[in-house]
Length: 469
Image (tube, rainbow, N blue to C red; front, side, top):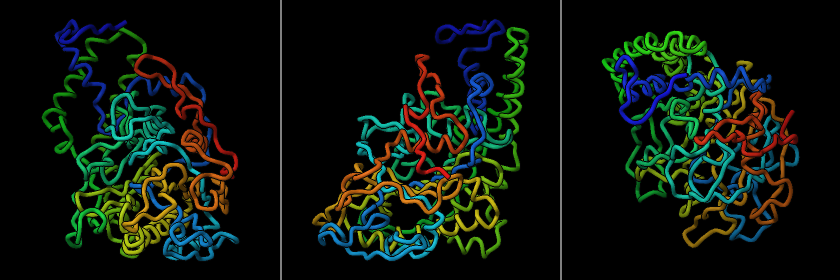
């Protein structure tokens, strides 16, 4: 048994504890520790799922369910707002008039109208982990639970030379200088973080006013290189490879489990030098007609990269509609709610999501790819004095396509003003459990927290049968 004791302690050959711990963080892409392999082998709780991959599009800020997918045309004017509903391809279902392309796809969709919780914060924590707490304004922290992507990596899902999870175009909150809670390895460790892309957006114009005048970002998500990953310059990378050889020599024969470490190390090095990851990010290889279909902006480019990552076998990709300084507040519409939806958010959504869904379908990939579109909360039923809607986590929506969901389904109903679920409320834990089920992962699987206590990955949630095909 190898014992590491106290700060600054050394192994017998002079390798320090800190250096040994760095070995555990070798992979740029995460998920390369021994527990990942042992967990997959020893639990015996993985099974085949309908979805091989998940693409999750986070509408950061809280999209207004009442103005998009749960309209209340017979409510008073201060509730129903400015937009009118239109018919969709699913008989009896109406959605916003500004979403005509999505309206034509609703027979393929599963619409949840009752996503409900009390986590009043602009973080994707709830629908990426199934967990909520009272830390409404806290940044991501090591004690947070792991998200779906981290669990995929922990269990070894995906090809050996690709990341198990990718976050596009950057970590949520990057444009605000904070790290929003959600897409992290959490208490499983930083080695299970996703690959965080980076971006350098440009903008069409300067905002006319602060925050509530969105400006479209242009550009593409960029794959990190060793030169721009903190603490992993080429020199340090070479040094780390030499360190691995030292560790191998020091620990040879200590435990049969160490033999498996070589395979994990090999996967780490393969990922860092993989041409497949670079190729997936190279959307210049796509025909112009495909790029034009998605739209030539940052978020559409992210969804196109997401499709390419699915083709490469990556199990979990999250795309976050980011806030970049004063260039708009995404879906956090305390003011100018209807202008932001009309001029920016809904035209963007109505172009890029139908393009993604149709592209996946045309390539025969939709049945094995779960597409999730949602935000962390809904918006308040009553329009405020600034023509905005305020935070409302008590009721919101999720739009699902492919990957084993039941198409042509509307699950749950809100009350007459869209304030609270009137039937079939959906908790974050049950929602995330459903995604795990579709991925073939038992949502009741236990992973150890920092104290070694077993924690269910979906925090007690159960798959929602009404959403499954």
